Length: 349
Image (tube, rainbow, N blue to C red; front, side, top):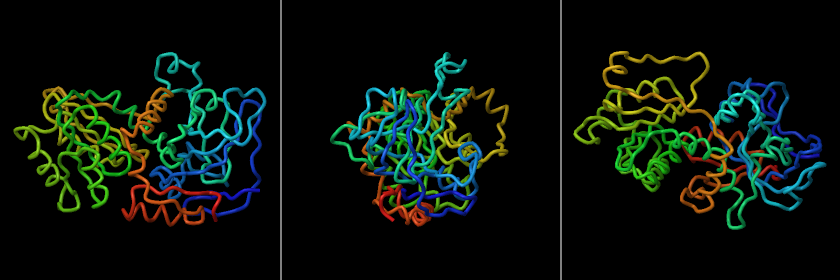
């Protein structure tokens, strides 16, 4: 038996002892050593997630690293004792989108959920494409960061940033900070809009030239006015990247971008929400609007490499490791901006 956080419905998570899963042919059983808090998992706890949790009760959580303890028949390249990090999905590599080089849009994406438990079985497609060995010098907590960072890598790979561009990043959560760092590494001057003293300070350390504490302004218009005043000649940002996942932030991005600029919408909004685009602005200002989603196996590999070289330092994002029984406390602390991320140790109750 193993410790597990079981999701029974919105706001209903129970800590139970459940059977350890058994790997089938092609699968790998991993002992979870670090599972990170994530905004998606917090939203899942609050309101459910039909795309990730299709039946209840269910384990949940998707950013993790650990040790291989057992391999199924036919598995090669992995053996017990190996330290591994895993993406939370894998493409089929056979559908139209996979063959078109857009594996993140795969029609048959295999999704993995269940990291808030002592053990997790990695399905065959993930073993084949998205299970990677961790370098010896990298901690489990850092390696678990490879999944969220991979989505930021994907977004930045598609976003048209040139050296010397001014990039405005909306959102100072973990991914907003990762995007800030990646934009800085691309040679951009970054303006970070967000809140939380620790998060904004971390944004500065990650390369933001300017920060706008949105909690100090009464309206979005005031935030925008301040951010635009920090751009060259007050024209607006060359590139704006939204990393909040709220329609208001998507709307704000359109107010921040200069003529001829680009906006990347990174944060996923709640289903059914909309935003309004001024057709005059879009047409006569020649804006480029880009939606980005998830990551490819190549993005995931680049992510682990960035963490391994510490060009993106994962040690700066995890406040501390807490027992599985404190998972809901960790969710609350993150929402209260007391930390950027926590690592969960499922072996501790």
